[in-house]
Length: 383
Image (cartoon, rainbow, N blue to C red; front, side, top):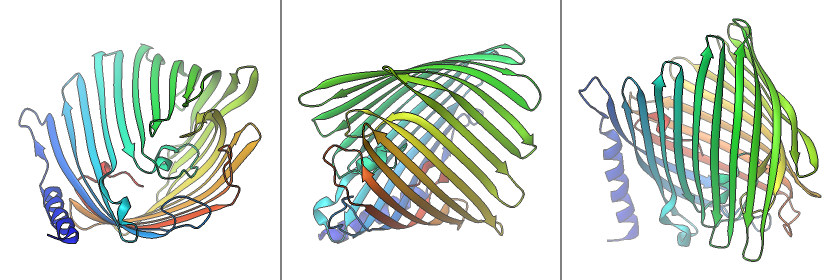
């Protein structure tokens, strides 16, 4: 049997799986099991994410998966697993059944009417490390990469207008067998609603970044204190801001997150700005990052959803700086209650580099994705 025929049989099998309706338990509709699948054709102008001699290719991607949700009066438990199988037209050596695998689990437990506990975790394995540079959108060459995360939090409502929470997060990144980054973070937050439209909060956060290479190991710790305000400007218009100082070693810089969101009658609009510190996959050091992004969404007729999302990222580390200009356009239309088609156009231009010894040339890249989705739409992340 030829490789193309075997691939076509897998397409048919996974399409049949995605068409199976989700299964619900009869015990008060507590357990839901929903298989899903998508079939995508992707044009990628630079599959290796390199500034010199970019290689374009056409990729066929199959993504089967499964979501489960269990609900009880006191607890909600959910999980999701998906895997990408890819076939490359011009670079068959890149094809494989393990292009990307992702599993997530989350638990929310309402211990008392005033106390809520949450925990979760995620494991993501990929051959495109740029998937892990969400905060910077920086290009990274193809390599086997892995991210595992864990988080836990406890929230207590002290009064009808005052609450507090404690949280912990861990993120571990691995590139091949030679580079590892571990990030531990803990925070404490107190929030008080001062009016029907306004809430204020104070937050303290500490983060410890660890970097391991074949020859070195280093650690950096940062502390930040911020004051935040959420305000409903109008019934459909909300604004939020968190601002305060952050210190890393003996260096102090501002930490800022601000957003405005409008759920308007004809269009959904969101604008966000952040200034923070984060890790970059494969890089030993915490980078300072500024980003601004906008999302504009509108539904035409009853079912044609269109979303436009421009963004800008600026990352600095020591004397190195990189800027990324990005634009994504997504169009989605349901065919039935469980089947939809999507078209996504993404383009980016990176100028500069913060990897030591990295090339200084611009890195342009654009992709065109056409996808057929069968199953719950929430299970299919945009990539």
